Image (cartoon, rainbow, N blue to C red; front, side, top):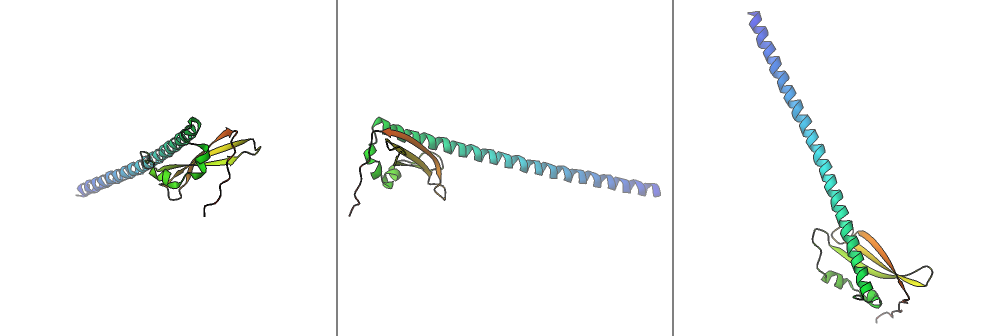
Amino acid sequence: MPREEHRTQSSRLARGGILLELLLAIAIFAATAMFVLSAMRSALDGMRRAELRARAADLAATRLVELDAGLVSIGDLGDEAPERAAAEPPPAGDAELVVDLEIVDSPDGDATIVRATVRDLASPERSVVTVRERVVDGFRPRIREPQR
């Protein structure tokens, strides 16, 4: 009889060992899956930020090219109102990018710099995504009187 009791006890230990191995394998699989999903989420966020920066750079370059082509008058840059930016159709995607153009005097005073600042209105801070500048020779901005 002691021999049968020993077999039963050893088979229980064997089953307990298999259960322990199975639980350990599931825990290792879950930890690995969490690591892989975290890495994928990080990579996708990085790709989204890179795409946003690329779109913002293209948008700023487009506005500066419009200025070069004469589609936007440099004398009217100071009058550009936020309503105009809101009237433009938002780009595809989850980001709502807006370009602000401003005139800045160059340090040497011979030229004028036009600065295009792209902001993401979808972010809570309305963060600046990119800033591009272009030098415009031979332009002196007129002084605007405040409206009464």
